[in-house]
Image (cartoon, rainbow, N blue to C red; front, side, top):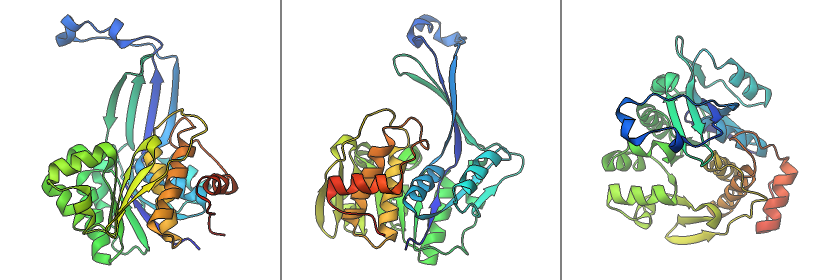
Length: 313
């Protein structure tokens, strides 16, 4: 039976608009110092996002018990209703009066170039969301405000709750000393292959060396699968073939959801990584971070077909 997992990270709304042209045809290089342009965007959609929300969504698909730990604004009612409707425990989501939920506004052109504006809103107050009385068998500290990430990490460490440090989009916020501080509190590290290179550069240590002080390091490699470093071993986790490649947004969060579900089910790191790969491959076939809705039986079928193992009953 799955046990509660504290999923610390951001919750956000993503507004994605499509400009049916090319930015380069409307932005004059010799006039960039006085830029004033407007793009007609007939296609637009609003998505539920943020690392905490995305990870919790994927864990819930598997039958897990995610407990998102996040700060949202007064406009988050529809998001909270959605999570409540899915049976996800929102008791640790704090509404900050007088703020908006973090929001990302993305305009994409026909060449897949993007112009993005990000408003952190309530996310800036994530450190105030005290979880020092929370109970869980595992946690994750995913991208959020830097102060909040450290606050959550310190609280989890003090309570003896093992957690995964998920660097992700918070990478620009952490210098070498920050990374070492966080690694000293965490039990595991998850990064993609690019982030792994940045961590090695900023800390002056290899992933193999970092793994010696942790339970595990997981490096995801997209279509090439993942690399697991644990107990002095390096294990290559074979990839899962996606039915189609539509949108990578939220794939890392889907992988974390699968990984955490495996760990809280008593699985090895290797099998947990395999499940993470399955969730990432399922997600990439759907547009948006929370629009895929496979049944548990469908997830199990992919897991068994690829790796020969089944989800716990």
